[in-house]
Length: 99
Image (cartoon, rainbow, N blue to C red):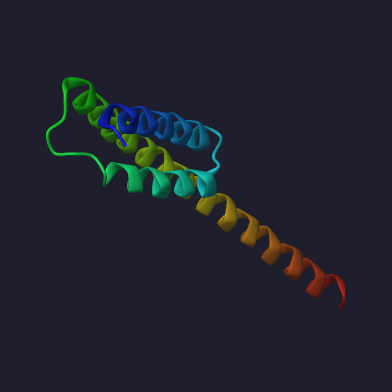
């Protein structure tokens, strides 16, 4: 595969990963990152400016998405803990109500 075609495919994967992350579809984002990784491994070390730009764009995108993923994980953790507290409260109510 030619480097220009490879770079175009990597760019397309980066766009798709950004979309999946924006939709909070983390399973799809992981699948796409894995697929893109196979292509990144095929890049030659001597890249033209367009290749360097694509790599930098991918790195910046990775940084943004990683920060978004950390926030999403914390939000989900907070929601889970709040739900577990409500479950515990319902259990306490049922224990008292059945006396």
